[in-house]
Image (cartoon, each protein chain N blue to C red):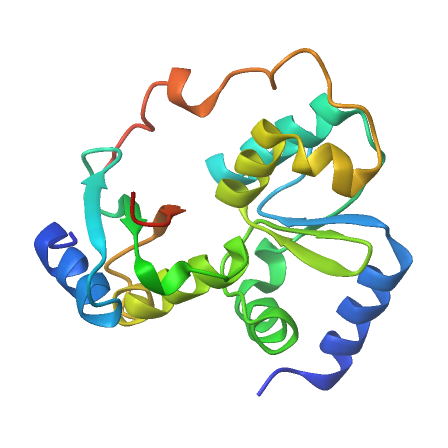
Length: 126
Length: 77
């Protein structure tokens, strides 16, 4: 059962921000490759968006989004109050032009900086 | 460290008739990528298609075996 007060805050944030990204870290300093990929896509779209760092309250926020959107993992991109998806769906929608349509902007000419496939895999320290 | 064959089996069991490929993206065994083509996806949004795949392997997320699962869904070719 999600925390009622936190759930209400999240609902208010989603209502107040036409484009809202729940992510690990910040747009300036993403703490997860998936979050970074969505930031790169949004930057390429040149839209204003709100960003919420979920790391300080990861588990409580997971419970909230599970109840609100039946989605447990972050990042999560909300557009006009609706969950659009995580990194995979956002990238697919970017490639197909559906994201530009959902955001009401022109499809940019350039691909987002640093496609995920071009990056070296993260280092393992285990 | 996830057992890729087990993850594939979990998805196949949840979505009978699906063609499933699971790969280890980083070599670390906890960041996986699943490519799933399933007849059950017909008529569903991408979000709902992803929900079905994630639900199939939820147990391995919850117990910490998998940290990240990248999903690519399609209808059977």
